[in-house]
Image (tube, rainbow, N blue to C red):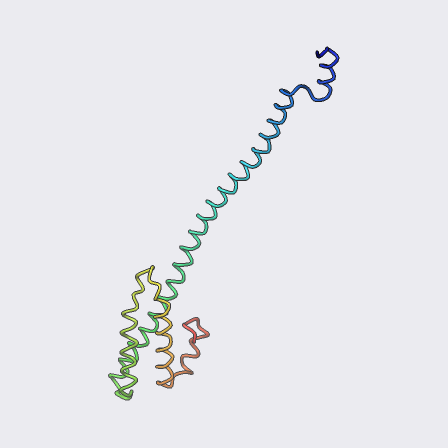
Length: 155
């Protein structure tokens, strides 16, 4: 049978089981609070990162899309000028005139307006190759080599 002395010993050793359980619950709540706050912070960070990434991706996509469109427009303008020169002078050969027509047609068919088109990079690469070939056939490498320094499409 417990005596009053046993109760005083219990209280100096940390109290009874109910008090000890309450203290453990308080510590568990503190540990859970830290974990809950960390998880909430992580979720907020993921959401904020996703929003920032989406905005940066949109901006980068817009910029790169503009660069591709500018490059294709440059090729189309060169093809149009070469075609006019070929008609006026008649000094270009049949092969060069066919290649100019092909470059001009591929520029028109490049479908730059579709942002989900995954084949656009391959088509622009093909346009670059045709452009380089035409520049070589026209003997204009020196003229278009200066364009590299001015920020026009490089090759």
